[in-house]
Image 1 (cartoon, rainbow, N blue to C red):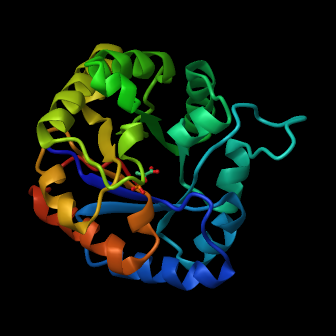
Image 2: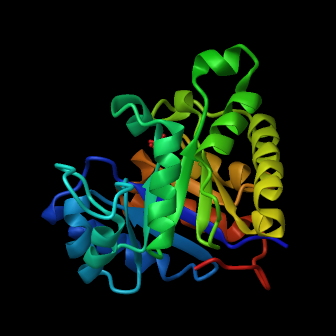
Amino acid sequence: MALKKLVAGNWKMHGLSSDLAEIKAIADASGAYPGVDVALCVPAILIERASRAVPGFAIGGQDVHFAEKGAHTGCVSAQMLLDAGAVLTIVGHSERRDAQRESDAEVKSKAEAALSCGLQVILCIGESLEVREAGNAVETVIAQLAASLPAQSGGRLSVAYEPIWAIGTGKVPTVEEIGEMHAAIRRKLEDAFGQEGGDVRILYGGSVKASNAGEIFAVPDVDGALVGGASLKAADFIPIVGAAAESRPVEGARAIA
Ligand code: PEP
């Protein structure tokens, strides 16, 4: 059975108080697509104001610390995200794996901390261009997934396949490459979680825009998208949500809210 699609925006280090109006515009326009789950992962400092501005709309963080509390200057715990009004968080984005040298083990701990607090989690994985060109993309990504996966999905886990070379570049893998990777991810999730592995949404991320969203969403086992640049403006983001709504019937679909 098809899973209800999730289209999540990652605002990265973009967003000031003056952008709350854009968040509201996105939340309001998303209301026209009840068959799609829509979320925005905003800078930590905006979470509370955003979640107050758009009650009922899913606001998330972009990272979380694995510890409950303690001497971790500049970090944010899962409980703090929840307290601010977040319902989800990204973990393991390639920009953090790279710039903050986050290991798979750390990403796994972050996912487990967030899930155990009741947050939904989007766990990011993806290969470099070098790995893709060497023909090792699937085995590399599956090894990364195996090492980053939380012990349990908790019914609140999504995995985002984001080839690093496709993020913010305008380059996108072929639909065959996306299909091959998502099928391999699904097999790994079912190995790890049994039947529950079939309920984990697998998002594609990397230069998704209105013009390519329809064909990407038509690929089997693509259960949504993680969108960076095109999530900053309702005019760019909402057509992607619309493409998700049109891509496959969701009647009777399992929603993981
Ligand atoms: C991302 O950073 O998660 C991302 C997918 O970015 P973009 O859509 O801009 O490629």
